[in-house]
Image (cartoon, rainbow, N blue to C red; front, side, top):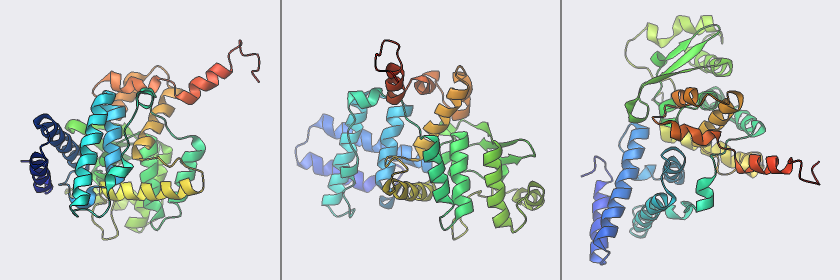
Length: 326
């Protein structure tokens, strides 16, 4: 039995498929697929999943994780997509959910699978950052985006940060990631942009001046040894991964409506953006990037060293053999 409140819905679906004479292999495969998604989500979120957590961005995030970070074969990814779509359709038809989420989860083709992960352009990143400064919680939302863009950490790792994990100095800073994928701990540097955003955010919460000296005097680790969440919600509890996803999704929808941000942008695209920018400026340092991203295998990281379709098109256009090159 799965360690989740969704286990009864999975078992009921299995029973329904048996009653509809679905093949044993299909039933076994679909149960494995849905179980894999549930366990992945709970590992990212650090809590038990519920029906309310079944959102398009969560499903697409799982598909992207298999495609870009686990390097699964196209057939395997599409088998997972098929199983999740079938389950969501059953949940919808049986009124367990109000929207059929399966319509937003698309299959991938061979060409899509072979393309290297794309990041955002500088102007698109800046558009998101500007949008974050216009939200209800501008300092917090802006700081979260800066942390994701400047470090490449996973959204679940970002959500799990405590004050105790942050180190800040005049010219340096760091974030200790203790609950990374497969519980592999690592430390990532915080550059000046990330540090400034954190100072502005924490100064607001601590009700002090937005200077390093002022916030360090009141830094929560000086008052308690218990983990103190870095990102807090309106109710002062820890801001969850889902809440951060919804915040980013809202910013993306607004940016897409104005044509300044791609509509398929997600937190993982921000991770891609960091990785691509790092390798553009440190072309041979795949090992360093793997350490920063928390990858177990260099093969996973090397995908970022592959040129994107747009980069290949630009290179072909500039060939000396091109008689119409500008």
